[in-house]
Length: 170
Image (tube, rainbow, N blue to C red; front, side, top):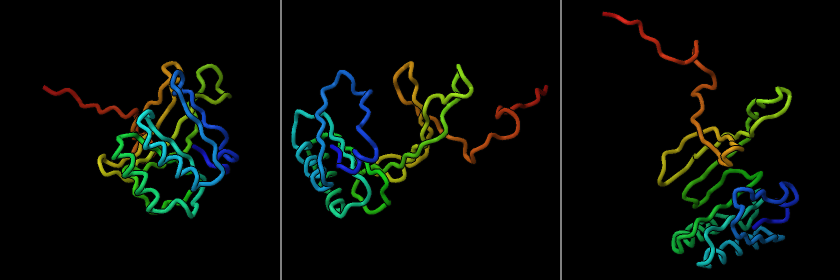
Protein backbone atom coordinates (compact mmCIF):
# COMPACT_ATOMS: atom_id res chain seq x y z
CA UNK A 1 0.00 0.00 0.00
CA UNK A 2 1.38 3.35 -1.00
CA UNK A 3 0.08 6.89 -0.64
CA UNK A 4 -0.06 9.24 -3.62
CA UNK A 5 2.92 11.40 -2.62
CA UNK A 6 5.16 8.35 -2.03
CA UNK A 7 4.25 7.00 -5.46
CA UNK A 8 4.92 10.41 -7.07
CA UNK A 9 8.26 11.03 -5.32
CA UNK A 10 9.70 7.49 -5.05
CA UNK A 11 7.95 5.69 -7.90
CA UNK A 12 6.46 2.23 -7.95
CA UNK A 13 7.87 -0.30 -5.49
CA UNK A 14 10.52 -2.64 -6.89
CA UNK A 15 9.36 -6.14 -6.07
CA UNK A 16 12.15 -8.30 -7.53
CA UNK A 17 12.62 -10.41 -4.39
CA UNK A 18 8.94 -11.29 -4.46
CA UNK A 19 8.99 -12.94 -7.89
CA UNK A 20 6.81 -16.03 -7.91
CA UNK A 21 4.76 -14.65 -4.99
CA UNK A 22 1.26 -13.32 -5.33
CA UNK A 23 1.26 -9.62 -4.45
CA UNK A 24 -1.78 -7.42 -3.91
CA UNK A 25 -0.81 -3.82 -4.61
CA UNK A 26 -3.08 -1.02 -3.42
CA UNK A 27 -2.61 2.61 -4.51
CA UNK A 28 -4.31 5.12 -2.23
CA UNK A 29 -4.55 8.90 -2.13
CA UNK A 30 -4.31 9.70 1.56
CA UNK A 31 -2.04 8.43 4.37
CA UNK A 32 -5.14 7.74 6.50
CA UNK A 33 -6.37 5.37 3.78
CA UNK A 34 -3.01 3.56 3.74
CA UNK A 35 -3.21 3.01 7.51
CA UNK A 36 -6.80 1.76 7.25
CA UNK A 37 -5.89 -0.66 4.42
CA UNK A 38 -2.90 -1.94 6.41
CA UNK A 39 -5.14 -2.66 9.41
CA UNK A 40 -7.63 -4.47 7.19
CA UNK A 41 -4.79 -6.46 5.60
CA UNK A 42 -3.59 -7.57 9.02
CA UNK A 43 -7.02 -9.08 9.69
CA UNK A 44 -6.82 -11.24 6.55
CA UNK A 45 -5.37 -14.67 7.37
CA UNK A 46 -4.59 -15.32 3.69
CA UNK A 47 -1.85 -12.66 3.65
CA UNK A 48 1.72 -13.50 4.69
CA UNK A 49 2.71 -9.87 5.30
CA UNK A 50 1.60 -6.25 4.97
CA UNK A 51 3.79 -3.39 3.71
CA UNK A 52 2.71 0.24 3.69
CA UNK A 53 4.54 3.34 2.50
CA UNK A 54 3.77 6.87 3.66
CA UNK A 55 5.52 10.13 2.77
CA UNK A 56 6.57 12.56 5.50
CA UNK A 57 4.83 13.09 8.84
CA UNK A 58 1.10 13.24 8.12
CA UNK A 59 -1.28 14.03 10.96
CA UNK A 60 -2.95 10.59 10.58
CA UNK A 61 0.30 8.82 11.48
CA UNK A 62 0.44 9.37 15.22
CA UNK A 63 1.44 7.14 18.12
CA UNK A 64 -2.07 5.68 18.36
CA UNK A 65 -2.04 4.62 14.69
CA UNK A 66 1.33 2.86 15.06
CA UNK A 67 0.16 1.20 18.29
CA UNK A 68 -2.93 -0.16 16.52
CA UNK A 69 -0.77 -1.58 13.70
CA UNK A 70 1.67 -3.18 16.16
CA UNK A 71 -1.08 -4.76 18.25
CA UNK A 72 -2.98 -6.10 15.22
CA UNK A 73 0.22 -7.53 13.69
CA UNK A 74 1.05 -9.30 16.95
CA UNK A 75 -2.51 -10.53 17.51
CA UNK A 76 -2.89 -11.96 13.99
CA UNK A 77 0.82 -13.00 13.78
CA UNK A 78 1.33 -11.30 10.42
CA UNK A 79 4.52 -9.29 9.78
CA UNK A 80 3.88 -5.60 9.13
CA UNK A 81 6.33 -3.01 7.75
CA UNK A 82 5.63 0.71 7.57
CA UNK A 83 8.06 2.59 5.31
CA UNK A 84 8.25 6.30 6.04
CA UNK A 85 10.03 8.35 3.40
CA UNK A 86 11.26 11.91 4.07
CA UNK A 87 9.97 11.69 7.65
CA UNK A 88 11.20 13.11 10.93
CA UNK A 89 11.76 10.67 13.78
CA UNK A 90 8.88 10.90 16.21
CA UNK A 91 6.97 8.70 18.63
CA UNK A 92 6.10 5.25 17.37
CA UNK A 93 4.94 1.98 18.89
CA UNK A 94 6.93 -0.03 16.33
CA UNK A 95 8.76 -2.95 17.93
CA UNK A 96 11.81 -2.39 15.70
CA UNK A 97 12.78 0.96 14.18
CA UNK A 98 15.26 1.11 11.32
CA UNK A 99 16.96 3.97 9.48
CA UNK A 100 18.31 3.26 5.98
CA UNK A 101 20.56 5.56 3.91
CA UNK A 102 22.36 5.05 0.61
CA UNK A 103 26.14 4.61 0.40
CA UNK A 104 28.53 4.80 -2.57
CA UNK A 105 28.27 1.65 -4.66
CA UNK A 106 30.92 -1.03 -4.74
CA UNK A 107 33.48 -0.81 -7.58
CA UNK A 108 32.29 -2.34 -10.83
CA UNK A 109 34.53 -5.34 -11.58
CA UNK A 110 34.26 -4.80 -15.35
CA UNK A 111 34.47 -1.01 -15.67
CA UNK A 112 36.04 1.29 -13.06
CA UNK A 113 34.01 4.27 -14.36
CA UNK A 114 30.67 2.50 -13.91
CA UNK A 115 28.76 2.07 -10.67
CA UNK A 116 28.87 -1.33 -9.07
CA UNK A 117 26.48 -3.13 -6.76
CA UNK A 118 24.32 -0.84 -4.58
CA UNK A 119 25.02 -0.44 -0.86
CA UNK A 120 23.14 1.02 2.09
CA UNK A 121 23.83 1.92 5.69
CA UNK A 122 21.25 0.09 7.81
CA UNK A 123 20.75 1.17 11.42
CA UNK A 124 18.52 -0.55 13.95
CA UNK A 125 18.15 2.32 16.42
CA UNK A 126 15.33 0.99 18.59
CA UNK A 127 14.26 -2.55 19.28
CA UNK A 128 12.48 -4.44 22.02
CA UNK A 129 13.95 -7.82 21.11
CA UNK A 130 17.32 -7.19 19.42
CA UNK A 131 20.55 -5.35 20.11
CA UNK A 132 20.63 -2.01 18.20
CA UNK A 133 23.47 -1.65 15.73
CA UNK A 134 24.63 -0.42 12.34
CA UNK A 135 25.49 -2.49 9.28
CA UNK A 136 26.39 -2.06 5.64
CA UNK A 137 23.99 -3.84 3.28
CA UNK A 138 25.13 -4.77 -0.23
CA UNK A 139 23.10 -6.41 -2.98
CA UNK A 140 24.67 -9.51 -4.56
CA UNK A 141 23.13 -9.97 -8.01
CA UNK A 142 24.52 -13.48 -8.51
CA UNK A 143 22.69 -14.84 -5.45
CA UNK A 144 19.81 -12.28 -5.57
CA UNK A 145 20.19 -11.45 -1.89
CA UNK A 146 21.23 -8.61 0.38
CA UNK A 147 24.19 -9.30 2.67
CA UNK A 148 24.84 -7.40 5.92
CA UNK A 149 28.32 -6.71 7.25
CA UNK A 150 29.48 -4.72 10.25
CA UNK A 151 31.10 -1.40 9.23
CA UNK A 152 34.44 -0.18 10.49
CA UNK A 153 34.07 1.51 13.86
CA UNK A 154 35.52 4.88 12.83
CA UNK A 155 35.12 4.57 9.06
CA UNK A 156 38.77 3.76 8.36
CA UNK A 157 41.08 0.80 8.57
CA UNK A 158 43.84 0.73 11.14
CA UNK A 159 47.43 1.10 9.94
CA UNK A 160 48.41 -1.83 7.81
CA UNK A 161 45.93 -4.31 6.44
CA UNK A 162 44.09 -4.86 9.71
CA UNK A 163 45.66 -8.23 10.45
CA UNK A 164 47.19 -8.73 13.88
CA UNK A 165 50.75 -10.03 13.73
CA UNK A 166 52.78 -11.40 16.60
CA UNK A 167 56.45 -12.23 16.55
CA UNK A 168 57.11 -15.90 17.07
CA UNK A 169 59.06 -16.54 20.26
CA UNK A 170 60.51 -19.68 21.74
